[in-house]
Image 1 (cartoon, rainbow, N blue to C red):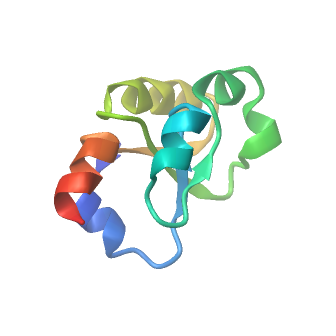
Image 2: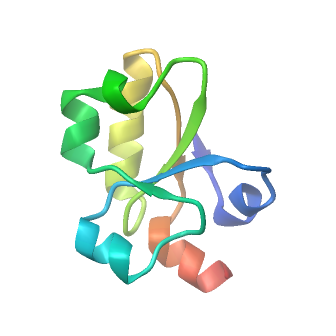
Image 3: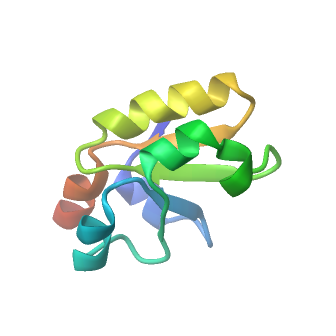
Length: 93
């Protein structure tokens, strides 16, 4: 599943996860996003996610987040990839 930045911005209090590096996150990120690295989510998703919540995950361009979301969904997590990632958000904001 995917969501556009414009649709994401219409949601109330979405759980947004930025899987980019800490340096990129600290430079700028979507409002309300939490920074959790891709490897951390792959290795120990139950530490950060639960199966009752929906998470909107983005990376720089939307490619890595789409792959990660597919893996996490196969493990029972409700994850949605943000189309175009951070770069799409920059164009939309």
